[in-house]
Length: 195
Image (cartoon, rainbow, N blue to C red; front, side, top):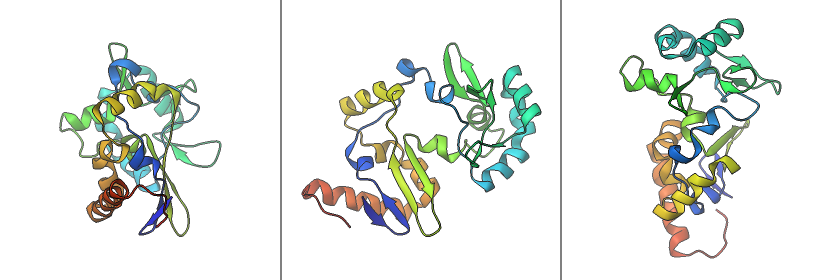
């Protein structure tokens, strides 16, 4: 772990490799698990605002879940998150054949909304946990992502490069530039040290 501004960052995001492989996993991260996508308070307001524009992109089951539970919910652990369909699929999931995609992102790609998707989804496999004084930035290893790990290794793409756009979105370009410097330093001198 090392400190970067007001973040504590796991070296795994610099050292592990990852590139999403949708043809292999079929978007399983959007339909597996026991909770919706984590949301910030600001993102709950964005979802409330854009839902009418996103709704035409969603499946009937997703619309029913959202209209029964709300565009966001408070999870069992007290965190804000997207609602689920039957405690499984994210309510915003759509399918292209048997591959899960994000209905919000589809609306974004078509220029209907200007918000891509929850930053927690955009960041995956990086997870951020906010604390009072700092944010913890960690690599989340999940078996369903084994094909992404294999593809990342094959293409030699470290996690932090794969999620660059999302990290810049969450922490800013200056923070990311500092992260790149740390990555270069580690590459030049891989001996264990903490910043």
